[in-house]
Image (tube, rainbow, N blue to C red):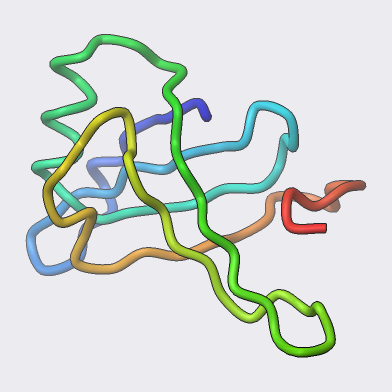
Length: 95
């Protein structure tokens, strides 16, 4: 995933870092975490590996997800996180 920081957006004093799927442009995951941002900036790589665990209901529909191992970060990922789309992406990473 590629990441970028938006210091104009914050939650409880934590700035936003947003990750976009490389293989699924337009799909993003955002985290508000100054510690995570510091970790990413220290690594110095704009493309990082993020493990994602998907939860499905009995019918196979996605009902949730969580991230783990964000570029080797082992702290609390954020005070608040979200999944979103920009534009009208053709394919979802969760299908």
